[in-house]
Structure formats: C-alpha cells, structure tokens
Image (cartoon, rainbow, N blue to C red; front, top):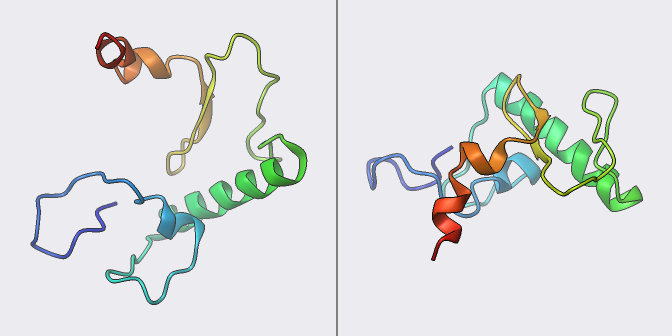
Length: 100
C-alpha cells in the first residue's frame, strides 16, 4: 500500500503503511481505501494484535502461532495467504543487511 500523495512518488513501501490496516484514520492526510481482500487482512492483523496484547500469543482460529523455538519463525500477514514461515531471513536477504 502506498500512502504517499497521488503522483508524488513512484509506489513504494514506507514506514507506517501498516497503520491503515490497524487503525481507522479518517483524518489522515491521505486516507487509505482498502480493497475487500485488504479489509480481510486488516481484520486478521487486528485480531492477532488484540490476542497478543491480551495473552502474549497472536494465535487466532484462522492462524495458529506455534510455540517459539529457535526464533526463526515469523507471522507473515499477506492478503489471502497469511501464514507462519521460517524462511523469512532467506527470502528477505537478511544476511546481506546484517553484513554491515
């Protein structure tokens, strides 16, 4: 989701792009309009956040978070494909960014 003003920048991912999924922001400078799939994703994200705040566990009926083992699992929220994954570091080339 691009939250930059229309035609101001090429589409990009920026800090804070998750906020329209988590909070209703009708007075935001550039309010986001979520598609039906994005609305479902937003609902699953809010459920996970609320569950985590209440119990320390982001699991829901739709997406179970397994007990933490070696710390390599990530809860990946993607429209219609949210899942627990263990290949996050490889997929996102984290070793490159950690090389410093």
